[in-house]
Amino acid sequence: MNVLLIGSGGREHAIAWKLAQSKDLDKLYIAPGNPGTAQCGENIPIGVNDIDKLRDFALQNNVGLVVVGPEDPLAGGIVDVFEDAGIKAFGPGGKAAQLEADKAFAKQLMRSSCVSTAEARTFDRFSDAKAYIASRDEAVVIKAAGLAKGKGVFVCDDPADGILAAEQIMCDKIFGSAGDVIIVEDKLLGEEASILAFVDGRNIYVMESSQDHKPIGDGDTGPNTGGMGAYSPAPIVTESLMNQITREILVPIVDGMNRNGTPYKGVLYAGLMITAGGPRVLEFNVRFGDPETQPILMRLKSDLLEVLLAVCDSTLDKIHLKWDPRPAVCVVMSAGGYPGDYGKGHKITGIKEAEQLGDVVVFHAGTKQENGDVVTNGGRVLGVTALGGTITAAQEKAYKAVGKIKFEGAYYRRDIADKALKGAVS
Ligand code: AMP
Ligand code: GLY
Image 1 (spheres, rainbow, N blue to C red):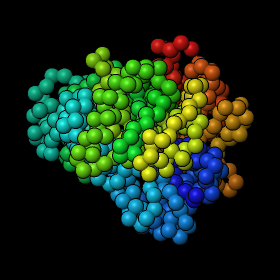
Image 2 (image 1 turned 180 degrees about the horizontal axis):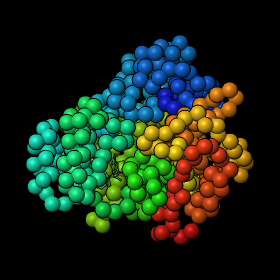
Image 3 (image 1 turned 135 degrees about the vertical axis):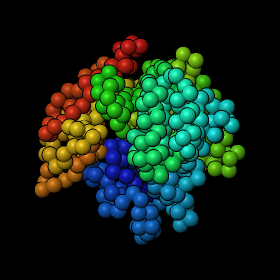
Image 4 (image 1 turned 120 degrees about the vertical axis):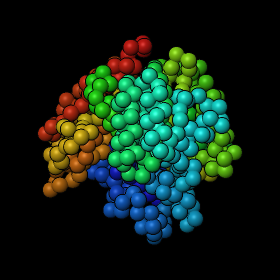
């Protein structure tokens, strides 16, 4: 079967790397891809939101399955367009993608499905939001309701900062129309975990747990980024907690989506805070996480293409996934200055040497090929991912691999997976 994968980040390199190992894969196309995905298939220069061109390409090249990486085209209804053209597409339809693209919709669904989340109120007028935030003498979290490339959330310990954030989002429109509506919610305390599940409309298959590291600085300091590293499994998610999350969060949400007339297919990603009172939902994403996908897929032993097709065909109940019991750790190397302004075009060396350590894959994100060299071309540049017998061993190997890779201004957190070690037997 020919497959078209849409996207160009580290997540898409990980998906492409795994799909390339599938026994049923004939040809893999990636649009637009990056130098990493080019090692797994053929990159096609079509942008992720150029939906009509992508459909025409798929029709002309006998594509049997389309796999959509990022949220933007999902929210834009790309899966509906492919299905209308008679091509299977992995991911939710445009209406179901509102679960990520509209946080007010997600909150409403959680409320009507009795899923635990932070107490929240939704506002479409700044004056109302301001009065509400001012009336509270405690930390608040301000969220743009629409898609804001992972940057639309402000955790404000002081209500005055909350009012400022609301003003920037609603009046200064720093996220454009994604900030027409905001959510003001209570700040939750605890440890975060990401739970990703395959959902085929009826059946739910929960993947191994993982944990992201959102802030740029060690010790979770500084502004949020797309994610500076991840590990899998997350020891905080014990088997009984995983069962609770499935029972109390995933099942009611999938049922709720069906009741709502927006049945869910694809990856359902629950971003959770594990509080003293149990797991609470911070957000839902309608796609694989980045960088969580890199360690998760390195641990997946089963054929990914088979699973993605089972989701499209609603036969997930026939599938059993095998996982490598060894933990995996992914350290993101970013461009100096990210998540603010950063330079591009710096030559990257040492990727091969890093991979020669064994059980290491260097997933490309913001890179490009230039005059025979791989150079930096984005904020998050590489996701250096390693498997190890223990979390400590995986962490040591990932950092050893990072040590082999050089580019001007390279930055990375030094504490990825330290959190896992706190509670783990390592
Ligand atoms: P989100 O995109 O909604 O997952 O938010 C991004 C990040 O903001 C999360 O990963 C958390 O670190 C933080 N965050 C979001 N909502 C809350 C909340 N209610 N309480 C504390 N932190 C939060
Ligand atoms: N790692 C966070 C995300 O994919 O949204």
